[in-house]
Image 1 (tube, rainbow, N blue to C red):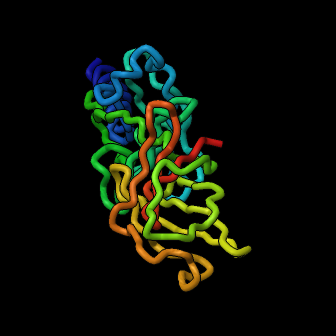
Image 2 (cartoon, rainbow, N blue to C red):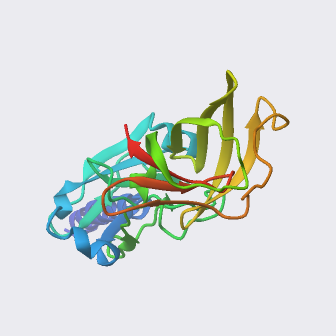
Length: 242
């Protein structure tokens, strides 16, 4: 009888220990959305309108390729992800289908991004990282030149603006022409609508500007949905989304 009891207890212990080991090895990314910064959109979206995609690398996140996980936030504003996760950092993209609201921020993704985009899985299934949604991602895309709102009269000659491309990987490019030469002005996004000029191709030598505004490069979207860009030449150009 003692032998039977010992064997029975051994089986129970084996099953219990195996179950605990499985729980310990479970890697989780738990997210709770916070919409406090986008309350003006409260009538336009439900929690279930937010899609979630997980990427293995920064490059995959920017290019939106090789998705590790894809799903939707639940009705309570939460999601728990454990599928195919290892003990490493992942890049999590959260956005509405129209990509107006998202967790996209201009940050250094080579540094831990404080649970905004870059996540490290944990074993605690009760802790949920709070992620704030913003409407910053609506800047991303191609914008066609429409008109000038303000002209810098110190620059008598101006290039013909074609379109402005703002990219998910925190860069922007202004496509322009002057005297049959195509120019590309490359910018780095700094956050809060600020940009920094990185390069002018093919060369800045013949680019028609005598007074620059390289310290005050700003993009903003007005209530009418048009994008206003205070550009390198000090002009305030207006763009419409393609």
